[in-house]
Image (cartoon, rainbow, N blue to C red; front, side):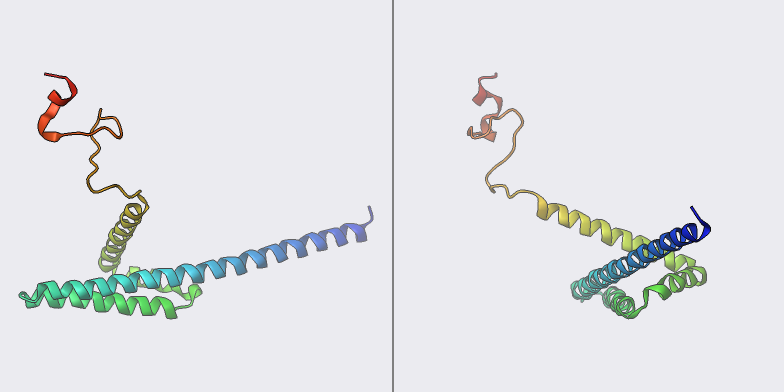
Length: 158
């Protein structure tokens, strides 16, 4: 191989790598935007839940105001996430965490609880529907009648 052939191959390889990197970067940006919108929607939903929950504390003005305040701040955070550029998001979060470490950790814990609650709720919706009269007793064959009051006597034990 001549030097010009090697140079051409190296140039083509570099161009291919650059194209793949640009494509990956564009796909990552699209996915990041979708994730950003999903996070904003979930945070906004939780803000609405906090605002609704504040009505349950009408007899306790301090608790009601505190829960409503949390809801309002979550709504502002959701709007900020929607409006934010993903490139600046990481930098802003890092700066906020350095300025307010306790608040950052508290917010991270709250988001963790919200995420766990959302995952738990999604698990409930994924479970198959069970007939309301069905009780799953160990040892009772499916389709067999069961009578809790009879206890083990109904199965010939006693």
